[in-house]
Amino acid sequence: MAEEKTAVKKQEKQDAPVRKTGFFKGVKAEFKKIIWPSKATVAKETGAVVFFGIALGVLIAIIDAVVKFGLGLIM
Image (cartoon, rainbow, N blue to C red; front, top):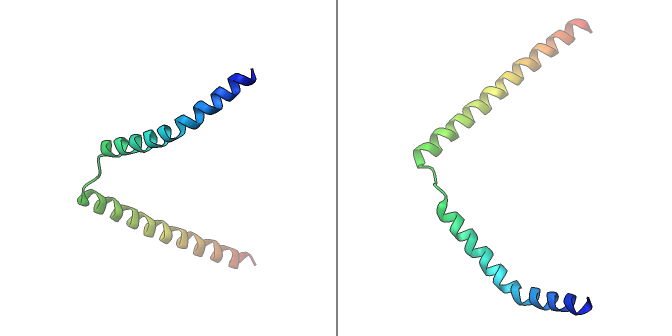
């Protein structure tokens, strides 16, 4: 049993550099599969995010003002 553990540890030490290089080769291969969006697509999506962010901020500000007004009437 102890001999098996020692053999496994030795094998793991030998495999460590292979696993690291294999990992980075795999990452490189996966990056080649990525289809990057065009500048126009990125610009459209960025504009949409900015617009909806501003719209949401305005909506929250309006709701806040209404709640403050309502609480002002109560108190």
